[in-house]
Amino acid sequence: PSCLAQPSASGDANQGAAAAVGEVTICFRGRGFRPYLTPARSDGTPIGAATPVAMEEAWWLASRGWYSVTMPMEGVDKASFVLTDEQGGNVYGAAVGGALMLDNRNAVVSVVGGEVHAASSGSPLLLVSDLDGTMVGDDEAGKEFAQLWQRRHAPAGGVLAYSTGRSLAQYESLAEERGEALLRPDALITAVGTRVYAPDGFGGAFAEDEDWSQQLRVSWYEKAAQEALEEVMAARSEEEVRALGEGDQSEFKRSLLARADVSQAVADELVAAVKARGYKAKAVVSGDGDFVYVDLLPEGAGKAASLEYVRDCFAIDPSRVVACGDSGNDTEMLAAAASAVAVGNSQPALMEWAAAAKAASDALAGENAEDGESTQQRLIISDAHMAAGIIEALGTLRLA
Image 1 (spheres, rainbow, N blue to C red):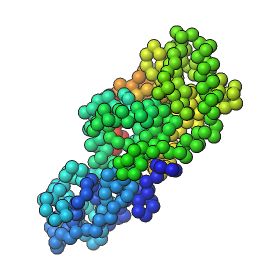
Image 2 (image 1 turned 120 degrees about the horizontal axis):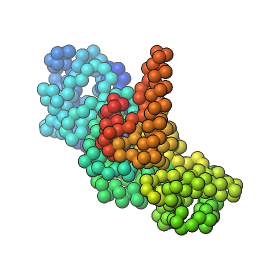
Image 3 (image 1 turned 45 degrees about the horizontal axis):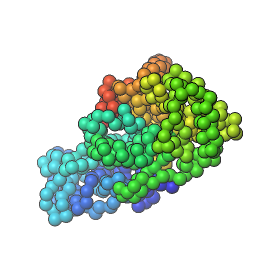
Image 4 (image 1 turned 60 degrees about the vertical axis):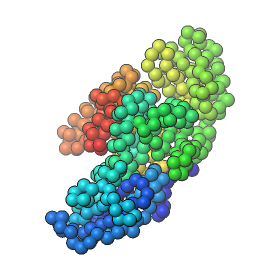
């Protein structure tokens, strides 16, 4: 893919996320640090002096602001680890006797803001979240999520993606407004799953993934979509449909507002109008109120398809995907993920879907339990709202 792949020096996009047995990987933020390793007995008694470790930058991490060093531990029961400045003073990350004690096993820890944290175990996690009403809405909870992600998941190779109905410009305005309450993602999906972006280099602007766009162009004709939109709006009264401005339209999305009680019929009419012109499309209804959004998209677009595209780009195990949302246009994304989260403030349409899906999942889990199979809860309906609901769900899934 054109811009999502972020390889390390060895070319492996996930290299450095976990060390081999007999090694420990330390991930940390900032430059000018010097890692030291002190071999020790099982009771923590040092064996010899601390020695500096040659640091190798793991570029897939560095591109997100992280650096990584792997230290051998063969023949050593335990070891202490400290970060100092380049002169050997000002120890950072003191946790046990001036250092963090690490067992001789696979281990990934992180040092953020001078504090040591255990990073997530297992293969890297992909978390895809809607923005408005899900990740965004409670700044304090947003900051708490950012800290959790930076301490536990980013150092272990986790990928954070946002999937939103907003455009790139609308997202950037929101990010500037929210500041530290909205963590910069590794991938950004906009316009209801029709555009995919990733940061261009080290903290640079977002670059569009042209491979994804070209994939959609194969079966989409923008002029036919615009004609279909105009046809449906002309056939309906102003009491039933309302036009949206240019900021809500894009190459792969045509949108309007429809009265809630006729919204699904309007969606069906849009798809039929595109089909009559020889093309395929899908329509997504979302929102809560008297008027809701109806988005006309390419058949191969949407939040589920774009999620799978990003997952494949970062080579994340399908079982390690978590999707979070709060509205009706999130249902296909939640249904496609191994683990799904409906935050506590979700709109009625999503809550109804989530309750039905969870009942079906629980029934299947019961049948599997009778057959002696173990099942993991995959759909969480949080009590907490917005980002706090995501944190709650990660705890329930034992991923916090």
